[in-house]
Length: 365
Image 1 (cartoon, rainbow, N blue to C red):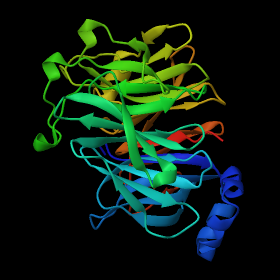
Image 2: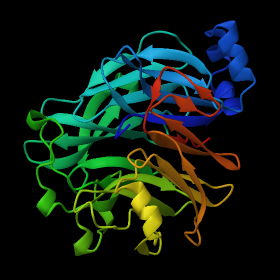
Image 3: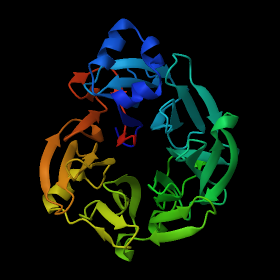
Image 4: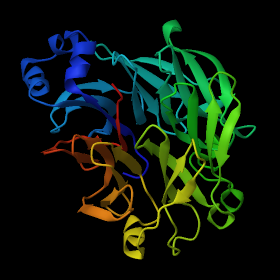
C-alpha cells in the first residue's frame, strides 16, 4: 500500500451532534445500528477489488457505513471543523478534490486544481471552516504552493501561498489557528514523468511554519546535510506545540538512517529520534503514516514496505509495541490504544474487500 490514500477518525457522539442526526437518517437500518454501537466514525479512501476508487465512512470496529465513488485514486480525506463536509484529495499527480456532504448519500461534488498545478493529496481547513488549504505543485517553476479554496463559493480557488520548499506533502494547522506547518518533501516531480523523482541528488527537504495571514515564513527547519535525501512527508501533533514528522529515505537503501523526528515551534528544539538498528531495518527506509495518542503520550509509526507498525513512548523513544501486519499503513490514536488499517482490507476487527488507504489522524472536536 505504498503511498496510498487516507483514513480519518472522529468521535461518534460529537459527529452525530454536529450533523443533527441527519447522517443516521440517511443510512440503512444495518448501517445506522453499526454507527450507534460504535464509539467512533471514520472516513477512508479505498480501492475496491474491481479496480474502482472511493471514500467510505466506517466504524472503529471496521463496519462499512456508506461508500462514495471517486473519479480516480484518492489519498487524504479531511474533515471540516463542523464535521459537515469531507474532502478527498487525489493522489499525486491528480488534480481533483471531492467534496462529500456527510448528511447525504449524494455523489461527491468535484473541484479541480488550476492549470499548471496538481495536488499532493493533503489539505487542511481553516479553524473557522471558511477556507480549505491544499498542498500543490507548480511543476513548471518548479516550486511548492498552498492553494487557497473558498468553501462558501463552491471551493473556488482564491489564491495561493508559497510552501517555501519543493514537494509539499502533509500539513497541519497549529492550535493558534494562524500558523500552518508544512512538510516540504524536497522532491521535484512533473506530471509528464508521472511519479518519477527528478532531483534526488540535490533534494533539500524542510519543515516550514507559515503565517496564514501573510504567507510569511515564521520558522524553517532542515535536516543535517548528510540526511538531505530524507523526504519529510507526514506530520502529527502530540501536544499544542510539538510537531512530530516521519520521513522516507530516497538515498542509499542499505544505510540505516533516522526516519522520525520532532520540533517544538515555541523553543525551536529540533531533533531526530534514535531508534535501534533492528527497528530501522524493519521499516525498510519508509514510514508511511505517523499518529499521536495524547491520552497515552505515545507515537505510532507504520511501514507498508516493512509490513510493520511500532508504538513509541514519546518521552523516551523506546518501543512499547510492535505489530506485524501485511500492508499496514493507516494508524490512529483512539482512546487508550491505536487503531490500524491495511491495504489488504483490515480495519479494527473487520476485513473487507476494500483496500484501505494511507493515513489515520485525529479530528479535533
